[in-house]
Image (spheres, rainbow, N blue to C red):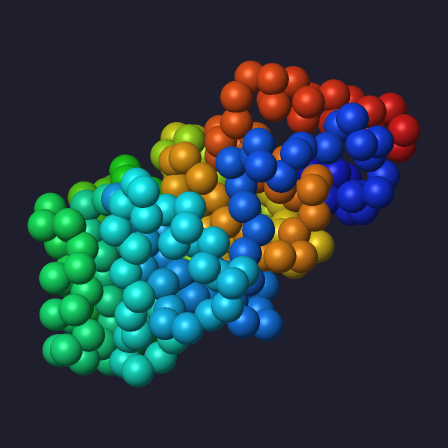
Length: 267
């Protein structure tokens, strides 16, 4: 049903079934001209690291988050794609070997003391593409080094599972999760969704962001109380994000149920 929901444009639903923008827990954002905000930011329950620069559509991250957590502007290896180069949770943050000493020191000094920042010597250096994690469990690329797997376990304090998502090795690009739910590539089979849900011990669904993009890791960042999606993300995709990641109250959940029922009846 999620695959069906994602195909419907915003205009399909009557105004009474749409969320007022200021009442939702998922927010649209954009970095300069890119809707792939997961490329430029990493979000956890205790901090957010994001790229230097951006525009007013990216400033919304700081505006929404700075009351609750540290928001750190930085680069990694001189690159602004910090979301694809790093992976972390409330316990720690992993950065690749290209991260300079100065950048590492800046990140360590900016984050809370209890967050361990660790540089990783790993051939697959785009850590955000090969690791998907919450505060308890991590999915990783099947070819990740054994030493890296041990570091993920020790620094992030998670159980580590080598897995693919819809035959894709880049689990960080095609899976997003918090402590309540997970969203995966829309072509993930039902059997694989059940297997992943058992491994991760969270609710799980297949879905899209940015008006049908299957690279959910690039277009969406999420923690336990908020989410940020690309500016092109439709109202229906937003509602699925809020539902699966448990970001809304009971009344909003009722609205989502009504939307799904209405859509199924129509189809």
